[in-house]
Length: 89
Image (cartoon, rainbow, N blue to C red):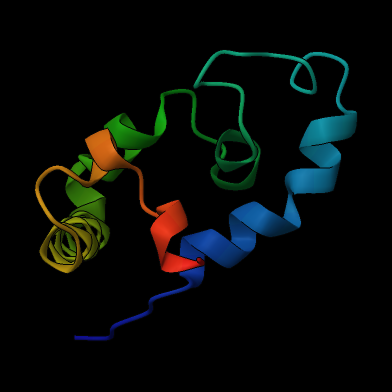
């Protein structure tokens, strides 16, 4: 089994200028009009793409990343903010 960690991320990033300059996609707020859609020729949103049968590895990697982030922060980080002023005084 191969493990590619930047495959869709780098391809999606390479389509970002084209997506921003596109008259339809450039000012859209819909999750289905992003550089991911252009890069991967996909009509759904990111989570629909992630949950498709061919993307089991990407889904597992995304879940691991979310769990890692959860383990790095306290449960009330979003309420306190990630940086507090007393750290800098």
